[in-house]
Structure formats: structure tokens, C-alpha cells
Image 1 (cartoon, rainbow, N blue to C red):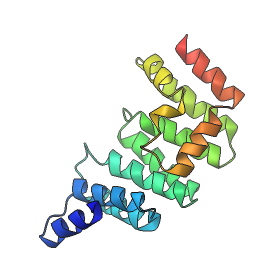
Image 2: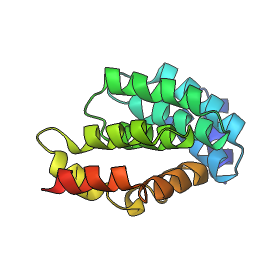
Image 3: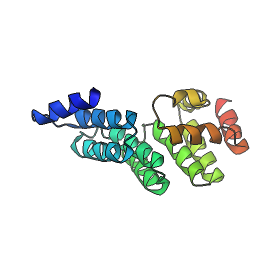
Image 4: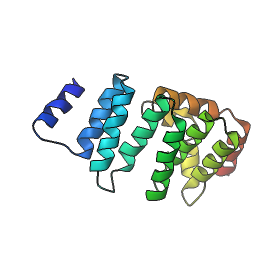
Length: 162
């Protein structure tokens, strides 16, 4: 039903980043990841600068679901450059690095998440998988769940909470 609503809105001439991001979300719920990725990419193109990190991160999540972590990492790093306050990108980078078999890169991403003035708060928030459940794709959630078991990640989270 949500997908039909976005299609009707598009047929009426509506097309903006929020609508296309919503279309990607609906396609993701239907597990049509390739189409979701395309919708998120289009949403990013049409989004104002203060919104583009959301569809871009959603596109990275779709890429992770499609088992294309290198492409996902490129998008995540772009988010981090353009919007360094988008904290979810640091957790997403950790999950991408984990998917690529890089526990050191994973721990470094978590260290970045836990750094800075509000790092302790973010470190606590991202210390469990609960923060990503319902927001991330199944493969991304699984990667995050697994990386939280890594000793070097646990150490970074512990140090970030001190």
C-alpha cells in the first residue's frame, strides 16, 4: 500500500527526496533491494544538503543487503565527509568494514563513533544492536550484531564509556 501511494504521488507530478526515500523504504520492506537502492540514489540527487545523508545511508544499507560492501563503504565515507555529525555513518562504516573482514577497521570506526564531545553518549547508544534494529537492513543488522562480539570493538566501547 505504501508503494502504491508513492507511485500515485509520482504520477501526479510529485518528486522530491523525501518521497523517493519513502519509495525506497517501501521497496526495502518488500525486499526489492535493487529497486530500493535506485530509489535512494534518486532521492539523494533530489535532496537538499541537510537531508541527503538519510537517503545516501539508506542506499549504503541496500548495497550491504545486495552484498556490495565496497560500494556501500564509498557512500558511507562520502556521508562522513559531507556530514560529519551524522553519527549513524560511523556505526555503518564499522558494519561495512566487518562485512569486508577487517576487524581493525571495524574497531577504528567504533573508536571514531565514541570520540568527540558527545562520544560517550553515542558510544553507550551504539553499544547494543537495539539502536539499528528496525532501521537497518537484515545483513547490516547481522554484521553489527557480530561486530559487537569482537574483543577489539568491545574494548573501544568500554574505553568510550569511561
